[in-house]
Image 1: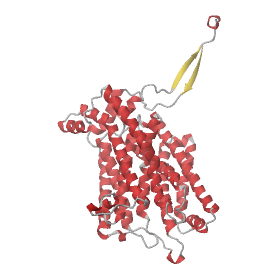
Image 2 (image 1 turned 90 degrees about the vertical axis):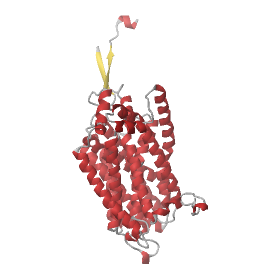
Image 3 (image 1 turned 30 degrees about the vertical axis):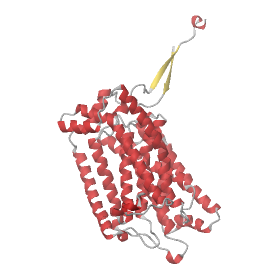
Image 4 (image 1 turned 135 degrees about the vertical axis):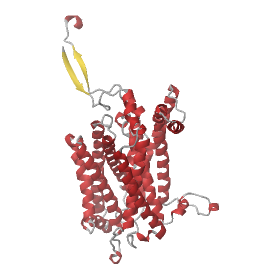
Length: 466
């Protein structure tokens, strides 16, 4: 008798956990008192938020003239940050919807945090839209309200209006997907509650969940329907954001590769931010048995693939600029690489094209410290990509007499700091008062996941041959 050992995959939940262990490990962060580390981190994020809120209020009070914009560079820091935050919000919907439809079980431990990150990132992006308006109290003018409300119907030919509809739809569906996925876990916390207040509020938001087979069946149907609705949003939202640029006639923007290129870049940066947050959450909340090396490696594989797509897009842009025979288009790309903002361009190329290729090595893909560092590097590179696309395409136009340089002021930077303060304040509140890992879905993948299986090979005998 001989044995054949065949590896299947790494376990998605390690440590020999039982169902009760899963419930206890994840609920204890919600039920216990805030830790000293959480209080320090939350306090820092609130201080950052308050300083950024001051800068944002000053911007609204004085007008956007306090920014570093000039007659030539009319879009710069604010739109760069807007596109960057929208891109970060892409990974949550992809992990929740697309990977659910493809039955990828490794999504179960990370989808809750990714969905929350999506909502918070979209809110941060929306703050730049409001700030860019200059008069945020008139923000409702971007909606199709009848003239009786005192505003005119919006211009539906403008991609800026498409942005409003795409992002509001994206936020609505993502919020619903995130909340409905929370309901079974909220019911678990409700049933474990020891105080009347906690029992009431978690019971209120768990919508009377009973855990019956009928309830679970409807939950499964709802998840698939929302996933089906959300999947087109993964492609549409950043495609429409890219059309803010692609539908213009400015050299460097007027290109048909922008929609798929922006979508790939959004997934690229979104997965990198999820990676950053998960690696922090994994250590702070001691969830190493639930957010495993397998999860980290799969995330890094997606980052490698999308980073390679982004690199091909960069090369395609240069080729099309040359092949088009339009001298202004060629100059726009040469200016990016060799002009006054050359340092931003090469920072973008290094972070987005070169650094993800390190993940071809399994040793690097499964190294936590290297993964954490490279996830930050990717997001730095993606911010520079948006800066390069926007600023370097504007600062030199057809008339050399109107060429100008852009330099951010403290209020440009302060408004960006506000978005980080808002993001991390919301994320820390989420991590304390709601389960960061989906208990119900993690339990569903615990059975049948094994590192290896054994097949007994029996030597044939005369009886078996007969």
